[in-house]
Image (cartoon, rainbow, N blue to C red):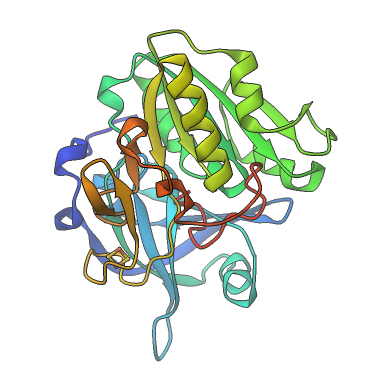
Length: 286
Ligand code: FES
Protein backbone atom coordinates (compact mmCIF):
# COMPACT_ATOMS: atom_id res chain seq x y z
CA UNK A 1 0.00 0.00 0.00
CA UNK A 2 1.24 3.45 -0.84
CA UNK A 3 0.35 5.16 2.39
CA UNK A 4 1.16 8.85 2.31
CA UNK A 5 -1.33 10.30 4.77
CA UNK A 6 -0.08 13.09 7.06
CA UNK A 7 1.21 12.18 10.51
CA UNK A 8 -1.36 12.30 13.37
CA UNK A 9 -0.29 15.75 14.54
CA UNK A 10 -1.12 17.08 11.08
CA UNK A 11 -4.39 15.22 10.68
CA UNK A 12 -6.98 17.95 11.01
CA UNK A 13 -10.06 19.18 9.28
CA UNK A 14 -7.71 21.17 7.04
CA UNK A 15 -7.17 18.05 4.95
CA UNK A 16 -10.88 17.23 4.78
CA UNK A 17 -12.97 17.48 1.67
CA UNK A 18 -16.67 17.01 1.06
CA UNK A 19 -18.74 15.81 -1.79
CA UNK A 20 -21.04 13.11 -3.06
CA UNK A 21 -19.61 9.70 -3.65
CA UNK A 22 -20.96 6.67 -5.43
CA UNK A 23 -21.33 3.25 -3.88
CA UNK A 24 -19.54 0.75 -6.11
CA UNK A 25 -19.81 -2.35 -3.96
CA UNK A 26 -21.98 -3.54 -1.10
CA UNK A 27 -21.33 -6.63 0.98
CA UNK A 28 -23.28 -8.01 3.94
CA UNK A 29 -21.85 -9.62 7.07
CA UNK A 30 -24.73 -10.70 9.24
CA UNK A 31 -26.67 -7.52 10.03
CA UNK A 32 -23.80 -5.25 8.93
CA UNK A 33 -23.22 -3.65 5.55
CA UNK A 34 -19.78 -2.90 4.15
CA UNK A 35 -20.03 -0.17 1.53
CA UNK A 36 -17.23 0.61 -0.90
CA UNK A 37 -17.27 4.11 -2.36
CA UNK A 38 -15.11 5.70 -5.01
CA UNK A 39 -13.67 8.67 -3.11
CA UNK A 40 -10.16 9.43 -4.38
CA UNK A 41 -9.78 12.76 -2.60
CA UNK A 42 -10.65 11.26 0.79
CA UNK A 43 -8.63 8.11 0.17
CA UNK A 44 -5.53 10.15 -0.73
CA UNK A 45 -5.21 11.79 2.68
CA UNK A 46 -7.00 9.41 5.06
CA UNK A 47 -5.24 7.83 8.02
CA UNK A 48 -6.27 4.84 10.14
CA UNK A 49 -8.64 5.83 12.93
CA UNK A 50 -10.07 8.82 11.13
CA UNK A 51 -13.73 9.07 10.24
CA UNK A 52 -16.11 10.76 7.84
CA UNK A 53 -19.42 12.49 8.46
CA UNK A 54 -21.92 10.80 6.17
CA UNK A 55 -25.35 11.97 5.09
CA UNK A 56 -27.96 10.87 2.64
CA UNK A 57 -28.17 13.43 -0.17
CA UNK A 58 -31.55 15.11 -0.60
CA UNK A 59 -33.21 18.43 -0.07
CA UNK A 60 -31.42 18.40 3.28
CA UNK A 61 -28.46 16.38 4.31
CA UNK A 62 -30.28 13.86 6.44
CA UNK A 63 -28.93 11.37 8.89
CA UNK A 64 -25.51 12.88 9.41
CA UNK A 65 -23.49 10.16 11.07
CA UNK A 66 -19.83 9.76 11.93
CA UNK A 67 -18.52 6.61 10.26
CA UNK A 68 -15.08 5.11 10.75
CA UNK A 69 -12.98 4.37 7.72
CA UNK A 70 -12.92 0.58 7.67
CA UNK A 71 -10.22 0.55 4.98
CA UNK A 72 -8.74 2.42 2.07
CA UNK A 73 -7.78 0.71 -1.16
CA UNK A 74 -6.39 2.95 -3.89
CA UNK A 75 -9.13 5.45 -4.67
CA UNK A 76 -11.74 3.51 -2.71
CA UNK A 77 -12.87 3.88 0.87
CA UNK A 78 -14.93 1.35 2.78
CA UNK A 79 -17.45 2.10 5.51
CA UNK A 80 -19.00 -0.38 7.88
CA UNK A 81 -22.58 0.27 8.95
CA UNK A 82 -24.68 -1.37 11.62
CA UNK A 83 -28.43 -0.85 11.13
CA UNK A 84 -29.73 0.13 14.55
CA UNK A 85 -32.73 2.28 13.73
CA UNK A 86 -34.57 3.82 10.84
CA UNK A 87 -31.74 6.15 9.94
CA UNK A 88 -28.87 3.75 9.99
CA UNK A 89 -31.04 1.16 8.26
CA UNK A 90 -31.38 3.56 5.33
CA UNK A 91 -27.62 3.89 5.19
CA UNK A 92 -27.12 0.16 5.42
CA UNK A 93 -29.58 -0.44 2.60
CA UNK A 94 -27.71 1.74 0.12
CA UNK A 95 -26.81 -0.23 -2.97
CA UNK A 96 -24.54 -0.01 -5.97
CA UNK A 97 -24.82 3.37 -7.79
CA UNK A 98 -26.48 5.08 -4.82
CA UNK A 99 -24.67 8.15 -3.58
CA UNK A 100 -23.66 9.26 -0.13
CA UNK A 101 -22.55 12.72 0.97
CA UNK A 102 -19.30 12.55 2.88
CA UNK A 103 -17.10 15.09 4.64
CA UNK A 104 -13.70 13.96 5.70
CA UNK A 105 -11.40 12.49 6.64
CA UNK A 106 -11.89 13.97 10.10
CA UNK A 107 -10.23 13.65 13.47
CA UNK A 108 -6.86 12.35 14.60
CA UNK A 109 -6.13 8.71 13.99
CA UNK A 110 -3.84 6.15 15.58
CA UNK A 111 -0.16 7.26 15.79
CA UNK A 112 1.04 4.06 14.18
CA UNK A 113 4.58 5.24 13.53
CA UNK A 114 5.31 4.53 17.21
CA UNK A 115 3.87 1.02 17.13
CA UNK A 116 6.33 -1.92 17.09
CA UNK A 117 3.72 -4.66 17.68
CA UNK A 118 -0.02 -4.27 18.00
CA UNK A 119 -2.81 -6.01 19.84
CA UNK A 120 -6.17 -4.79 18.55
CA UNK A 121 -9.09 -5.11 20.97
CA UNK A 122 -12.59 -4.31 19.78
CA UNK A 123 -16.22 -5.23 20.13
CA UNK A 124 -19.08 -5.22 17.66
CA UNK A 125 -19.08 -2.19 15.38
CA UNK A 126 -16.02 -0.99 17.29
CA UNK A 127 -14.00 -3.27 15.05
CA UNK A 128 -14.65 -0.90 12.13
CA UNK A 129 -11.35 1.05 11.98
CA UNK A 130 -9.07 -1.92 12.42
CA UNK A 131 -8.77 -3.21 8.87
CA UNK A 132 -7.19 0.11 7.90
CA UNK A 133 -4.94 -0.06 10.98
CA UNK A 134 -3.92 -3.64 10.21
CA UNK A 135 -3.25 -2.87 6.54
CA UNK A 136 -0.89 -0.01 7.36
CA UNK A 137 0.93 -1.91 10.08
CA UNK A 138 1.29 -4.96 7.84
CA UNK A 139 2.76 -2.78 5.09
CA UNK A 140 5.43 -1.73 7.59
CA UNK A 141 6.17 -5.26 8.75
CA UNK A 142 4.63 -4.71 12.19
CA UNK A 143 3.08 -7.84 13.73
CA UNK A 144 -0.65 -7.52 14.40
CA UNK A 145 -2.92 -9.64 16.56
CA UNK A 146 -6.64 -8.89 16.88
CA UNK A 147 -9.16 -9.96 19.50
CA UNK A 148 -12.73 -9.13 18.56
CA UNK A 149 -15.81 -9.66 20.71
CA UNK A 150 -19.36 -10.13 19.52
CA UNK A 151 -22.73 -10.85 21.09
CA UNK A 152 -23.58 -14.03 19.18
CA UNK A 153 -23.04 -15.99 15.99
CA UNK A 154 -25.04 -13.53 13.88
CA UNK A 155 -23.00 -10.55 14.98
CA UNK A 156 -19.76 -12.54 14.76
CA UNK A 157 -20.22 -12.81 11.00
CA UNK A 158 -18.73 -9.33 10.98
CA UNK A 159 -15.35 -10.97 11.49
CA UNK A 160 -15.60 -11.96 7.82
CA UNK A 161 -15.18 -8.30 6.89
CA UNK A 162 -11.56 -8.40 8.10
CA UNK A 163 -8.42 -9.79 6.54
CA UNK A 164 -6.17 -10.06 9.55
CA UNK A 165 -4.08 -13.21 9.80
CA UNK A 166 -3.95 -13.49 13.58
CA UNK A 167 -7.61 -12.77 14.42
CA UNK A 168 -9.27 -14.25 17.51
CA UNK A 169 -13.00 -14.09 18.19
CA UNK A 170 -15.05 -14.24 21.38
CA UNK A 171 -18.81 -14.23 21.74
CA UNK A 172 -20.97 -13.57 24.77
CA UNK A 173 -22.85 -16.84 24.26
CA UNK A 174 -19.87 -18.93 23.18
CA UNK A 175 -21.46 -19.76 19.82
CA UNK A 176 -18.29 -18.69 17.97
CA UNK A 177 -14.78 -18.74 19.38
CA UNK A 178 -14.17 -18.30 23.07
CA UNK A 179 -17.06 -17.53 25.40
CA UNK A 180 -16.59 -14.11 26.97
CA UNK A 181 -15.44 -10.62 26.13
CA UNK A 182 -12.76 -9.34 23.79
CA UNK A 183 -10.69 -8.05 26.70
CA UNK A 184 -10.62 -11.45 28.40
CA UNK A 185 -9.47 -12.92 25.12
CA UNK A 186 -6.79 -10.24 24.80
CA UNK A 187 -5.50 -11.05 28.28
CA UNK A 188 -5.23 -14.71 27.31
CA UNK A 189 -3.50 -13.97 24.02
CA UNK A 190 -1.17 -11.69 25.95
CA UNK A 191 0.86 -8.63 25.11
CA UNK A 192 4.61 -8.15 25.47
CA UNK A 193 6.14 -4.96 26.86
CA UNK A 194 6.74 -3.65 23.32
CA UNK A 195 3.15 -4.23 22.28
CA UNK A 196 0.76 -1.32 21.84
CA UNK A 197 -2.83 -2.09 22.74
CA UNK A 198 -5.21 -0.37 20.33
CA UNK A 199 -8.83 -0.46 21.41
CA UNK A 200 -12.16 0.62 20.03
CA UNK A 201 -15.63 -0.08 21.24
CA UNK A 202 -18.26 0.83 23.80
CA UNK A 203 -17.66 2.16 27.29
CA UNK A 204 -17.47 -1.14 29.18
CA UNK A 205 -14.91 -2.52 26.75
CA UNK A 206 -12.72 0.57 26.93
CA UNK A 207 -12.97 0.69 30.72
CA UNK A 208 -11.89 -2.96 30.88
CA UNK A 209 -8.99 -2.30 28.51
CA UNK A 210 -7.80 0.68 30.57
CA UNK A 211 -8.05 -1.34 33.76
CA UNK A 212 -6.04 -4.21 32.25
CA UNK A 213 -3.37 -2.14 30.55
CA UNK A 214 -2.97 0.09 33.60
CA UNK A 215 -2.40 -2.88 35.88
CA UNK A 216 -0.12 -4.63 33.38
CA UNK A 217 1.97 -1.55 32.58
CA UNK A 218 0.98 -1.61 28.92
CA UNK A 219 0.47 1.45 26.76
CA UNK A 220 -1.75 2.10 23.84
CA UNK A 221 -4.59 4.09 22.39
CA UNK A 222 -8.36 4.03 22.40
CA UNK A 223 -10.71 5.30 19.75
CA UNK A 224 -13.78 6.71 21.48
CA UNK A 225 -17.34 6.58 20.35
CA UNK A 226 -19.37 9.74 20.82
CA UNK A 227 -22.55 11.40 19.80
CA UNK A 228 -21.51 13.99 17.24
CA UNK A 229 -23.58 16.89 16.00
CA UNK A 230 -21.15 19.04 14.00
CA UNK A 231 -18.14 16.75 13.74
CA UNK A 232 -15.93 19.81 13.31
CA UNK A 233 -15.18 21.03 16.82
CA UNK A 234 -17.77 23.79 16.92
CA UNK A 235 -20.55 22.53 19.16
CA UNK A 236 -18.53 21.01 22.04
CA UNK A 237 -21.16 18.32 22.28
CA UNK A 238 -18.64 15.49 22.20
CA UNK A 239 -16.23 16.47 25.00
CA UNK A 240 -14.65 13.88 27.27
CA UNK A 241 -12.64 14.32 30.48
CA UNK A 242 -8.90 13.81 30.14
CA UNK A 243 -5.79 14.64 32.16
CA UNK A 244 -5.49 17.71 29.93
CA UNK A 245 -9.05 18.84 30.62
CA UNK A 246 -12.09 18.32 28.47
CA UNK A 247 -11.23 17.46 24.89
CA UNK A 248 -13.45 17.07 21.84
CA UNK A 249 -13.70 13.58 20.43
CA UNK A 250 -14.30 14.84 16.89
CA UNK A 251 -11.20 17.01 16.48
CA UNK A 252 -8.89 16.21 19.41
CA UNK A 253 -9.68 12.52 18.94
CA UNK A 254 -11.33 10.17 18.32
CA UNK A 255 -8.06 8.43 19.24
CA UNK A 256 -6.53 9.21 22.63
CA UNK A 257 -3.68 7.66 24.59
CA UNK A 258 -5.10 5.22 27.12
CA UNK A 259 -3.30 6.93 29.99
CA UNK A 260 -4.62 10.35 28.97
CA UNK A 261 -8.23 9.38 29.55
CA UNK A 262 -9.88 10.08 32.87
CA UNK A 263 -12.48 7.84 34.37
CA UNK A 264 -15.69 8.52 32.52
CA UNK A 265 -14.03 9.47 29.24
CA UNK A 266 -14.89 6.09 27.83
CA UNK A 267 -18.52 6.56 28.80
CA UNK A 268 -19.17 9.21 26.20
CA UNK A 269 -20.67 6.83 23.71
CA UNK A 270 -22.86 4.22 25.24
CA UNK A 271 -23.80 2.01 28.07
CA UNK A 272 -23.52 -0.99 25.87
CA UNK A 273 -22.26 -4.33 27.00
CA UNK A 274 -18.61 -5.18 26.69
CA UNK A 275 -19.06 -7.13 23.49
CA UNK A 276 -19.97 -3.90 21.76
CA UNK A 277 -23.30 -5.20 20.66
CA UNK A 278 -25.04 -2.05 21.77
CA UNK A 279 -22.51 0.57 20.73
CA UNK A 280 -24.13 3.76 19.62
CA UNK A 281 -23.86 6.67 17.27
CA UNK A 282 -20.58 6.15 15.53
CA UNK A 283 -21.19 3.46 12.95
CA UNK A 284 -17.86 2.47 13.25
CA UNK A 285 -15.78 5.52 14.76
CA UNK A 286 -15.67 3.07 16.73
FE1 FES B 1 -19.36 19.19 17.66
FE2 FES B 1 -17.43 17.48 18.40
S1 FES B 1 -19.32 17.04 17.46
S2 FES B 1 -17.53 19.62 18.75
